[in-house]
Image 1 (spheres, rainbow, N blue to C red):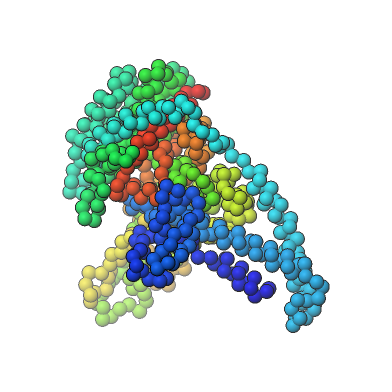
Image 2: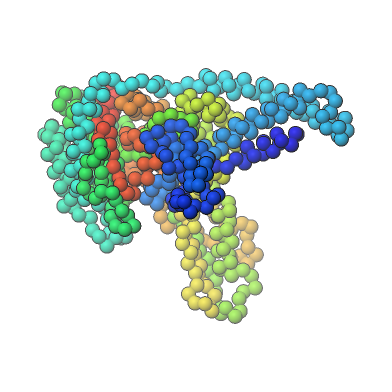
Length: 632
């Protein structure tokens, strides 16, 4: 190959990231190192809509910024969305450039004269090389039309259209009222404290205050619908439908919030429980997790009652009071109550909190995309241990000791992660397929032809970042190691803890079997074997359908109110729906709120807030969803 083109090809394949994600951004001052990565300082409302540039200190020109994604805070979960953004944006441009350069190289060689361009090679050898590249070029000529055809003919059910005048008017007229109600709800400090992990106790008086706020603020719902207080503090509201042959739907949210320390290390711009309305936003803990959904769902029901609407399908509202500490006292009891009400699999669809409509989350995609989680990861905590006689450190065993055996096992688990899932129907794969027609031309070619690019995309995603890999596989993390008690005594009992976040396409049995085979093979000559014990677990959720009526209701409601597309996603944490799997086959986790990717860090973080206008949009979304569920 001509050296210049060869070098260009290699550089394209190993192109550096377009930007860097970090919890600790580099210093931006004048004393920054000349070669420091400069994060964009010019991201405003247009961030993520197009590549833009920013001048760093001392006139250094930085790389293109693709939305200024930052590491979010999903409690202790990894920054999934931003890292997927980073992954795809630093891989897809290099992939396209590489493909183009290969075509250029092949074309140049195949179209050369019969005389060899490298005279030092024997003619017969050069003829063979040229024949090989001619064959490759011919294959590419056949493939490229297929790639372009697939990209051009890719279809989507989403059609961009401006919200109707009635929706716009309703949002304008109601946003202020529901923002005021959210503000009052935020002022009630309904913080859940785990009695096993915190010295503080949950203030149930604050929960009762929120109950009263809901009763007083939604008088029609209180007087006309059936309210049940489950285990004293959770609420189930039943709106009876006219057609008993139709299964009901259930809208879910939770009344509690996480703590919001406001000190030198956690400095809020406004008091976290002030509920302050400032600059067109409602500030405080619970604004987007999850009191906005409580007020939004209740507001939709109240407005429909005012309009005289009668659902054909029964509607349940389920508000747990301890979701933030796993729902053992709330959602667990709601599930038992609902089984008595409707029986197993007696609900058509369940709609709970989840990802939102995010702008800047995907390369080549303009505007917001609604990420609807149709599955949740599970978790599996294993204790792995080995015992031996022990003894004095002056006479160590001739064979490996317990610590060495455990060290080998840890190394095997770290270096051989669980198999990845990137096949048709899996989370990320389905997401790219569904959104394909809405991408810019370059990304559309790739996503329309995952039959060809899937193996490469899978490999790139797995190597790009921990969070990107977590979307494709069950993760493995060594979290605790315990061993000896004294410096001159050989440990007789060594153990360590492995925490797996289990992908929906895996099972507990397959993961445990994988681990056992990995750490105990080949068998040891001395017969020693590491024992594996399940310490704690929650299975991954069933995967809900992407072709169900309920999925269509979400898609149409989001389109009519927000003019945004939706796509499937995987919830990396657990919601209250973990208790509801026996109630319905179709469970969807989604919050109808528009955010930029840089704002997602507010979850369980600082300066949580939501726009006043957004509250009106939430109410309209739930109104549409309830109406559409009654149209069948």
